[in-house]
Image 1: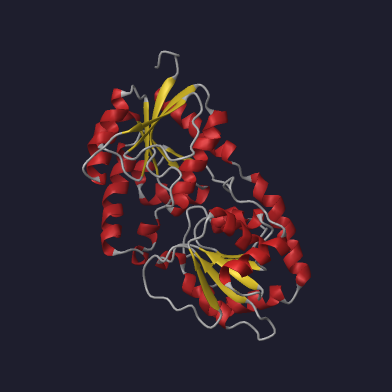
Image 2: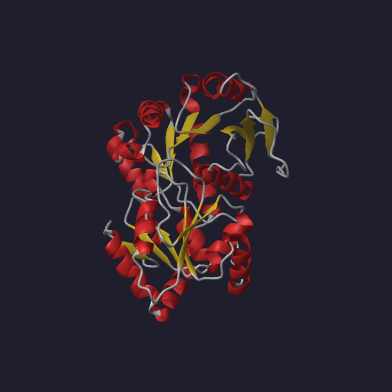
Length: 363
């Protein structure tokens, strides 16, 4: 314990306030929630970089920059040694754990999609994940994941995780704000150079995210609908055409992302598999109706507030989109249901559940 009698939790903070898509959102938002949920704990945020500019730390949080010659050496040696030097009773990282962590390690495993669909990953990434994640689960005192779906999959595919895995469902990040629809459309027009109505899909373009399905579905839309398909996110890897309706916005800041959601007539989430699916909640918050796949935890997150597609055929998605765009009452119903569902998820609850795991390990 620290001098103030608080158990110390060391966190791998390298992704906090970064741009690593959902992983950065997880760590940044979790820390925001822990400020109110874990005042009885002392947090040491350890990274190989300086504290992010503009980050304000609560009294029981401190930032510690620890150098290393490589990211691998940092994870294996620098981080756990620094954590123990700082008196950590708990050490929390994601996907991997150094053997130096001993019996006080927690790993967050967002999903095991690399085991469910290995073809969605580059060979090197698949090999690394296949080797390190089961080892981390075995070493960990506790495993945290982000949905009940992911918990079932982890415990099924990594048997050593059974009985020590906790689900801490995620939420919409605080920086996503609903924008007046007309204002949002104006901002989008200024950014992308068109005033047409549009449907939206947000993701790094990896094979698992299945953005090609959105492109093909949009390309087949009835000519009554002048909608473009806006694809927002990092380039990722793999070849993909934008189709005859597609427009790529590239990676956008959080303000523009809120505008894109708020101005869209429909949001498409065609991913093959998700451990959670934060963009669905982001769309809900901004009043954007959602059509999503049944991949992984997406049905768990969407509930009855989105159209959940069991089919992977673009023609079926086209028919669903045509049916919604042609029926404003259906869109309004989805919009209302999404607005009611989004607040059911909160980072305060994510942090509360996570802090309980910290306390159990510290004891």
